[in-house]
Image 1 (spheres, rainbow, N blue to C red):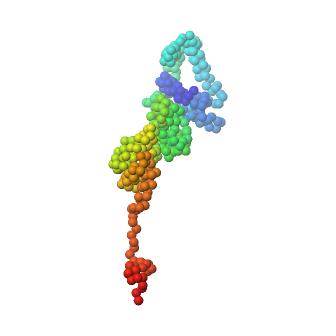
Image 2 (cartoon, one colour):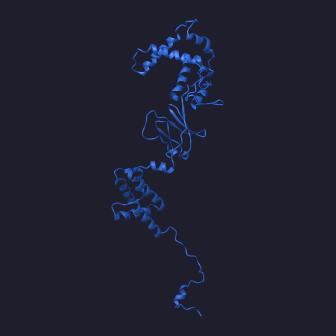
Image 3 (tube, rainbow, N blue to C red):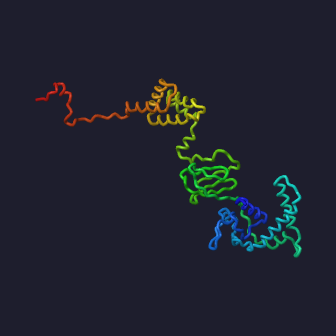
Length: 334
């Protein structure tokens, strides 16, 4: 049985009884108990969460000792056999029809008179047991499943169907993921670091929040042809012409995004005027400009026209011959 179904069985039972018992005594199935030794009992985290929500204590039976709860074992076997046998000749075309038939048979069995004592199961419950139940909490428990994956290099975690992002600085770390029907929560060292709305259908792309990405990755995924065109138009006519070539030279515009992004970096490094001049020279020489050629021209232009020209210091070091020396034919004054 899956953990979510196991928890829902408890929720439905509590709602049916109209209250919560003081103790739960389950078997040592993996959906209930993670470890049960002579010295300690470690409950499944999801099951422990349910117990805290309903304020009920869980005391598992001893390993391999179903006799710790013989009345429950016998009653479950009798009820399941009786209902299954009474419906064995009926055909159901939907799950809802089958569930409705089982519910009707359960009520019939609960009202069936005892053979050795007065009353029935329903009256026995109402007169002897119901008053000892604790009240239900205000909100119905939403079953959750915990998984403990290691965050991969794509900073994604999976719910078994779809993938969801976590902060990229958790790459390589082990996190705790709480899965409910509607929510995916990620915890790192008991601190909540991410929350996503859980998708009920598989989809090709992962669910990624921009704030979980590295800055470079977020910027890269934000590239689009319109932004490059607007930037190039304001930077210079030759730059705009070069950007249009990069965007239209491939089968799809996305193939030119890398080259356009490289031009933006060159513009930040050398300025729009120098970049526009370099693009103009390249376009005059070839109809297929490349970022490499443009970069070489920008660098060459920067070396020929440095931003900071060194200033000659006043005064010499005693060796340099001045203009007066050469005007006198290279002779020293007597």
